[in-house]
Length: 406
Image (cartoon, rainbow, N blue to C red; front, side, top):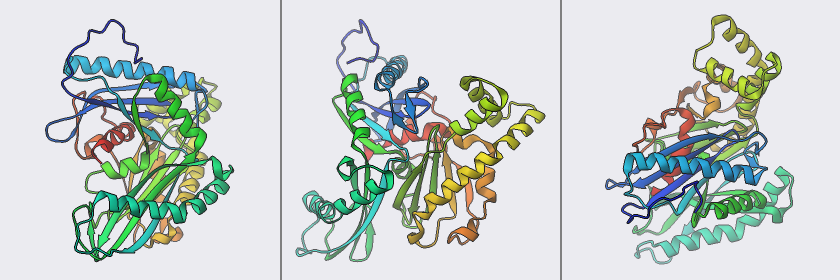
């Protein structure tokens, strides 16, 4: 394996470890973790490393070598941190959960009714696999054609990322996991995600270069919705917005079910570039100034100037959110909770824009939605031994780690 490690002594493995890799437009975040005795994700290494300029565009990898090198360094530093905390009592990771996001990633939900012939027999995994296969057979070709047309590529260039049974009702009763239950009528919601083949092939090439033996690609807003505390109960609904450097990812959850996801290519980089152009700064200098502003470290005059500077870009971003939410108009009444995460979410204008936007005039909201940030402490079954992942920008990476429990 790579990971920038030399002359490391071989020790007997004690705990199996895993990786979660959030390959963002601006930052790569690496989570090294184990599953502890309480069946919770225990983070023993965490690292954030800045991407080289030009390595990514709108969450799409355009320089494989640079991204692979940055990942290798980030993983190496996470391993070093783990050794300081955990000693040598863990096995080097061989499996990774890799996040995927961006406007070229599409999530589709299909609702299916099925009547069982063997209602007195318990539902098993083989039966559920057949149900998913049936959905793929009858809907995937048309779905791929629609996605290809929307993103401007050929149908044979669209590939499935993953398909999940999102929720199941057995004879009218909702169950989280249908295995072992008996019943006649099944109503189940299948959530499938798709992306251009070239996107998935680039991830496969990176994994090969890093020497990772097994990996799973996960759509990030889906992972966040599964890991957020209390969001999988029958009466829980929310809109989740993850604002990265190059993209914004939107997911809707209603009554514990994921209705769908939508992404668009506007993120925090838009505001960084606006600062760079207006103040004649480098991108790194502009990013630092933006972070200082978000953290309340600038003076009053500078803060007022930036607030005015961002007004147009925030309006454009809100239009992107509107277009994303239009994808969910068939869902009925919209949730009145909006949860924000990602580095771009920290700009004061983002939260203010969401609070003051005329949502009631645009969509079927019962009342104006409340806007809250997601912090790592809001995620379920995650223990961070490193105490390094503390901000909304760290949520996506930790949510990817949580997928090991799904």
